Image 1 (tube, rainbow, N blue to C red):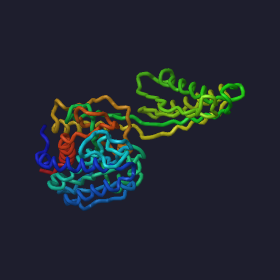
Image 2 (tube, rainbow, N blue to C red; image 1 turned 180 degrees about the horizontal axis):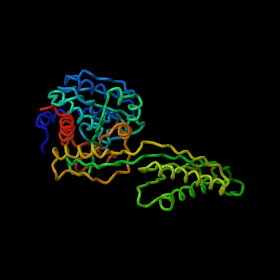
Image 3 (tube, one colour; image 1 turned 60 degrees about the vertical axis):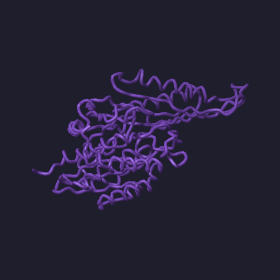
Image 4 (cartoon, rainbow, N blue to C red; image 1 turned 120 degrees about the vertical axis):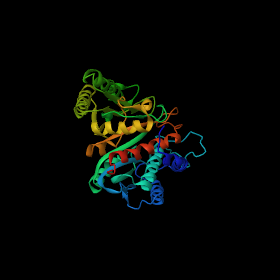
Length: 388
């Protein structure tokens, strides 16, 4: 692969950075030690304009080129997951119950690699805004950073991000114009009846039949209320009720997730869920409350920036490993909040065979770090070239 020679020279440094981060995972907005490590590396590279404490532990660092010009934003997420690691690696997590099971340690290391190269060469006009973000997995750190004004404060005009992809060929870069990842919503249904003896159901109001029926009815939203040519997932992932075999329980809980790509679809699902719950309350003589919460919006790539990113990707990984029309994912990503504010592109970087995301056996493939760092570096140089 035609990765940048200078970046290839410090591939071992990127591996060391990544493995240090892997050993020291942090969750949510509490990425303070990770951020401190990032700041230390950035200062080693001669990058001194660093703005920290954004979204609690996030930061934005600026690298200025050799001529005036626009600001391009490059983002990496830093947070880990509350999972007990099972890789058996020598550099496995040293924090019980926490691990980097989604590659954010690799994302951070790749952006640091690009930062080192760009700080050394500065072969571009304008400014690079390095965005190191906490709480992608849970909490919407991207949204908080946007709410705290990073786009306007640093005059960012375009934004780009990479995410590793286990199972895809190592070094493959793939994206698509338009929607690439789904919006994610959640729902909670609380059902209240009247408890009683298991032998005397006529003296009780059983919440469990209502919970079971609501669960089944929710499945008809996709099959009977939704246009089949559009993507939609409704998943009931939790049902909780009962404590012992001879007691009719007085309450039940149903919860889950909804994945879609369009606001009208979200509106329809929420409306149907509330209608189903109201109908079941009457049919089963129980009280039902339904809470529907909008989460991360769909991640939507801008066509112009997607085409440009694909051109740069082809330069790095070659035609054989380039995918420009990948199937969109039903997973969600809070980089979507940045793309709502500015045009940009989100891409995936294949890392070869290995355990899937969010698996205790997952591990980032350090061999692809130079590919990701080279992509970021070339992206800046091609987007904001110095005049010849």
